[in-house]
Amino acid sequence: MSFVGTTIEFGGIQLRNVKLRNFDQSVRMDESNSDPMNSKFIISAEGVVHEQDVYTGTSQVGLSAVGELKRLEMHFQHSRQDFKLFFEGVPFLVVRANVDKADPASVFVGNVDTNNGPKTSGVSVTHIAGYKAFRVTVTFEISVILCASPLRTSASNQNWLIHNRWTLEESQDENFHWQRVIRGKAVVAHAALWSESVRQFLTPRLSPGYQFTGSTYLISRDALTLDYSVSMKQRHAAPPAPGTTWEGVHAESVGIGGSLGKSQITLAIRGAPETPKKDLLISAMAIIEARYGYKPAIEPDGYKNNYWVTSAQITDILNENEV
Image (cartoon, rainbow, N blue to C red):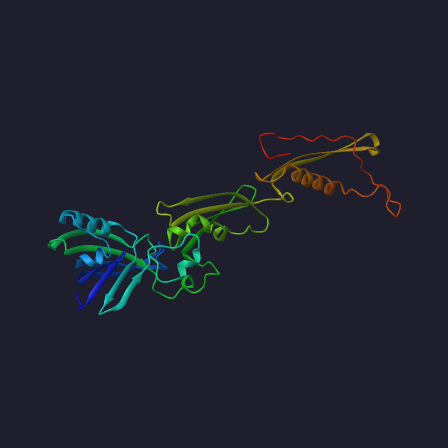
């Protein structure tokens, strides 16, 4: 396919009088074949590069034709450069290669390649006349989002996720406690956005009566995909914040005639690595107070508290965040 006046610009260097040997466009779907993720272009082109388009303002005296060929060849073999395709001077496809890492909102400006591109392959450079003009044959692979999407409308909602779908697995143990495992895959628009940064948007909230039991995150080699798994299990009771897990036993014993009783609580409470142990100790004391129902020694109505502390022991687990 060829149009008069077809031009391609790649990384600032123009291919003139371009012949399009192949122009293929397809829609890339997600793994469930439910959502379109981007449009993929395979463009094989042959064109002419003139010396002034390559070395504007730079003296090239003394360079050999072989040296010029190598320079051009290396330029077109270097992926992730801005790509522009013009028909009769009118832009048909303009794709940016980079996103400003310091400003993730820059992804909303123009079409950004969503597969770490634009990419090139099959590069061949031959000279026509000395090193004043060169014939370049190259194939470009470009992936962009062409359809209307929140990705392109607002930076404030940080909706730069191209794709996020998940599965939910539920199982039940011998005590009829339910366990839920959510597994999903998220794809971001550009590696500079770093798929790791979307964790906070993907981790589901805990269901009422459930405890978080673990999570895994796997970042792909191209930094565009994050595979994640989050599990939670139904529990009879949860420790007060900031406790994460706990065990407790409350034992009661009665003396002869039932006139004097003894009560003992054994409790262990754990927290996240950054949780101060003093906060865990406060949570443990709150559990004990709630269990015994402590009141002032003499209530206004004359009621006297039936419990008093005779001894207490606190154990600090040195190698764990546990009291």
